[in-house]
Image (cartoon, rainbow, N blue to C red; front, side):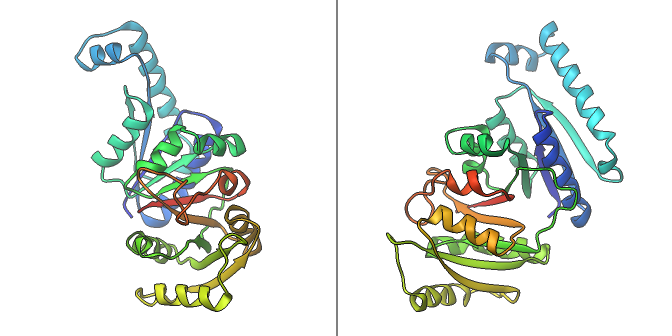
Length: 274
């Protein structure tokens, strides 16, 4: 990991994400790309990008650059390589373009607690980034001055389509020395015996070089509640899951995952695109 993208709207939650990104960057000797998107009517943005100086936009761009410069003076960024940019684009499109252009390895974004995670599932910028980003997306809910990933819970149905992103999950866990808690959630509507679940997971992991991991089957009333409850029981530092580019978080476990997993999980969530 060498390049971390942190979109910011200068909110408290965005700074929580930047603080976590700074800790990751320090641990991995990575560069941070800090970007702010200014959204204006397209004709105004096109005019400025074409060289026209519209006073209102010039004013807001200067204010945004000033705020970024203030952020760069933060103690927690001292000694790190941080590039900053202000873009005249819609947030969703601009973030994805910045990620692609800079060969980003990880996107770190903030969320506004429960409300933010509800928005995550109904069309917010964060949800769109989670859905479309080729790079993993780490969503931070709270300030964490000692961010760690010692216990990394990954919940899945361990189907064949998970094998490709799982390679990246294993690499991510190895990079941070995480213990992978691999869990299959059993529910009344989708029940497997413990032995059947165990065999599915054992067959799945047999194709990977894993050493620091454990396999779990957890029974609960539904998948979302099961993930949250198991993560709390395991004292997880991080919850991981896979997403589809077109169907987003709703196509998880070959069915749907409701806002419950992110609304009630008071932990960071990292997503990997299938």
